[in-house]
Length: 115
Length: 116
Image (cartoon, rainbow over all chains, first blue to last red; front, top):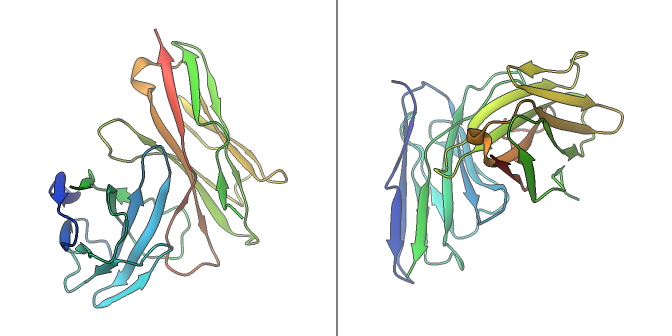
């Protein structure tokens, strides 16, 4: 079945460590996104990419990095510079076209906890 | 200023009754799209319904309908005949036609709890 796979589902990180969250899609979508969700709050955009080898910062990119070497993959690295990384991270993808009605498809999320 | 505002952090509704979840938005674009997503406790985001800024009819999808009032910049979600499985977080989101990136901007969400 087509979809977006995020792994791992739960991740624990020690302070000062970098950690990478995986996001893979087989929907043949050009655009991919990373969102952060804090408890009881909405989603905030970290990074997005509309084409391979190109990506743009979102609203809260500080302390995060991404790569887009393949169309199917958009991994997110949470670096030690991110002051408060404990959160729920959601990856999404969508078709890129001029239509505004294109829905974004989401993965199941990764819950990151700093211990 | 918040682009998407959901003023109800939590809502209760009796099973089988209808409920309205509020959403107001702020944009200077004439062309935009409004979305509602459901997030169960498992965490995934489920697309529910879409309304385009030029759509003259309110969108409907099964038990979901969108009360779109363009002049008031509101796009409220109406769920009819609530079911226990409707208990979840609900997010309103917007895509602006004049903004690069095709991304969605989300509101803070409303937690809906359906009482048996």
